Amino acid sequence: MRQTLQLNLPNSVKFHVTAEQFATLATHNRDLRLERTATGELIVNPPTGWETGKRNISISGQLYRWYEDNDYPGEVFDSSSGFTLPDGAILSPDTSWVSSERWNALTDTQRDTFPHICPDFVVELRSQSDALKVIQAKMQEYLANGTRLGWLIDPKRQIVEIYRASGEPEVLSRPANLSGEDVLPGFVLKLDRIWK
Image (cartoon, rainbow, N blue to C red):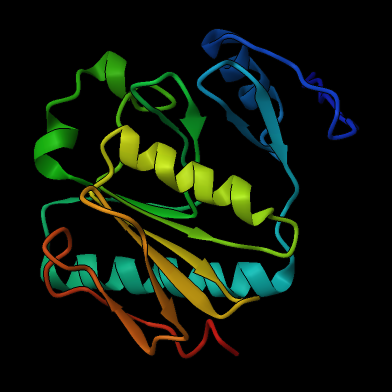
């Protein structure tokens, strides 16, 4: 019989778990969206609302369609995929991509459950419950661990923050589309459904 842990924690309560404990928690609580900071703090994310879910499937779907149509070498992941970053954090971007070259260099052990790699490309879609400073810090953590291009899409403020390995984030107000630049050549994300 599967046991389920229900966590009802105020923001002031913090639990620290090892990577092994985190893997066990995640395995036994697949309905919870869990992440782990580099210092071992357990993060329990609420499920997304329908608006965020609708927007996220649009983003993931467009990336996957580009990947399929272009047979571009790499792997696309959705929001249920967690990655063990070099700093020890286990994070789940809303959408991500890893180049084939880097993915194929992983051993079977490194690919186990939460692959030991930071995606080349990440998207974080801010939902109503996301604190902006927290999600911005998460974007900086991706960069510090090897992400080459990241988009923080904020429907509430109708802006996109573009994170690149070189320099400060670029802020765009209600852009119609975004380019995958040299990380995802030819990929263009249309944002018309995101701003609705």
